[in-house]
Amino acid sequence: MTTSATLDERSQHLLRELAPQVLAIVARRFRDFPDAEDAVQEALIAAALQWPQAGVPENPRGWLIRVAMRRMMDALRSDEARRGREEEVAAEAVLNRTEQDIDLEPEVDDTLHLFFMCCHPALTPASSIALTLRSLGGLTTGEIARSFLVPEATMAQRISRAKASIKASGVRFEAPAHRERRERVAAVLHVLYLMFSEGYAATSGEEAQRSELSGEAIRLGRALHGLIPEDPEIAGLLALMLLTDARREARTGKNGELIPLDKQDRSLWNRAAIDEGVRFLDAAIAKGAIGKYQLQAVVAALHDEARRAEDTDWRQILALYELMMKLEDNPVVALNHAVATAMVYGPSDGLELLRPLDADPRTATHHRLDAVRAHLLEMAGDYPAAISQYRLAASRTMSLPEQRYLQMQAARLSETSPGAADA
Amino acid sequence: MNYILLMTGTKAGVDAYRTWSKSDIEGHFAFLGGLNKELTESGEFVANDGLGGPEHARIVRAGNDGLPITDGVFPESKEFLLGYWIVDVETPERAYEIAARLSAGPAPGGNRTVMPIEVRQIMTKRATEL
Image 1: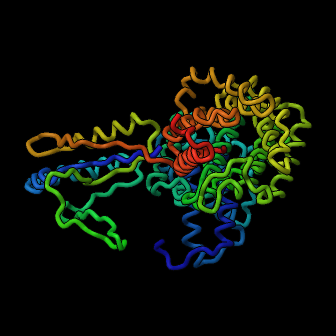
Image 2: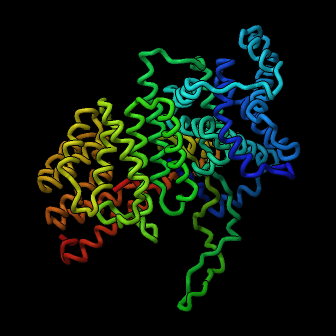
Image 3: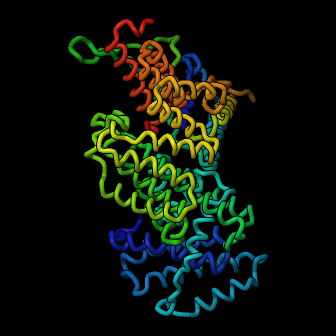
């Protein structure tokens, strides 16, 4: 920062709060998301430079709208080919008012369209996440870069490329056709789910920088739920995130080692998050239209509600995975289904279900298949085979904490059953 | 996925490089700078560093007392790391493509360096639910 004075925390918070609102208003006026995003970023920079000296204006939102609209107008005027749009006239009318009189509020749909824009199918998931964090989360490019562990310049380019793709795709800032709406909501949910997973997957070393991604995904999930409270899958995803995040503290040990669900100290689970997740879930299920996020959330809730690992209702979980198998062809679901089957009917039934996955190119050489097989072989008491599968999985994973965990499992079995390792 | 591209060389190679002409050196650095800029623009750049020459290199082992024992001279024939790039790419093929670009850097006489680039995937610290 080149300025001597910087914004205090309250003003920073205010800017974060206002940024998506201002963007929604400006994008609607000009029906142009990428340019509006640029203009709002410039307005935010102007605020960060001017407010520490001049003080926070009486109507900060009006101030930001005015500055962003002026930037939009300047950009439009310098672009001869785009002159004379009706948007220009509308913006002129706003600019003629004083800041105090700019009492525009974003409409519910404007904010929803922001979600649709940022999670547009023309974008890669990674750029959707970055754009959503900036446009709707109000995070700075530097903050987003830090959570993705890349330099700020790299992240800035990812964001501007994402905006260029939106521009190139020709989509305007307006409501998608009614028949498209469902798909677009699904795309938003997918992006929020990925954002959450990015943060939740963080382990020691990266945790501090990345875990805010999960918090941000939950915050945005709440915002989206507020916009369309009647959509049970939005509520389902929100519940899933809360019910999963509740276990965060228990999922790694003090030396950063992974702790599987059945070995976790359940007193570390966040009861308040579990209760809240269950409330969202109950309300969603009552609406009738079941979907994959609700189903996953029910599984998460069944785990969270078991006081001890052995109290887990595996029969119900198995039934849920059976439903999920019908809903989508997803190898991760198939693996979990095999585990649930083993928990209910014994390991040999589970192992049988893993066989077809050997022929599936998505899982054939994937370490998760080896890891699940190792686990079920151990359940079946076939230690030599379990040890070799744990080792195979360890050699295949590209995750350091998973590799360490899998090697520890192989070592533990070799020590408890001497001779097994050499078989 | 993060990949590290390791550029390795020999002392003989470094010695030869030190005799390059001004314009050859400039041409090579312009190429490297351009590539880094390109990787930033494509959103793939994570890090890049060059390492000090072999005369600054030491091999260190712990002695019985835990104190460092350093080898005096770096062996002539040994291959060593010259520098590295870390890129965040979608596929391994893309990492190979960038490595090939690096290997095709300009050398004197209109030639290419054809330096060997070792491509290694960096393990993530992330973990899925068990």
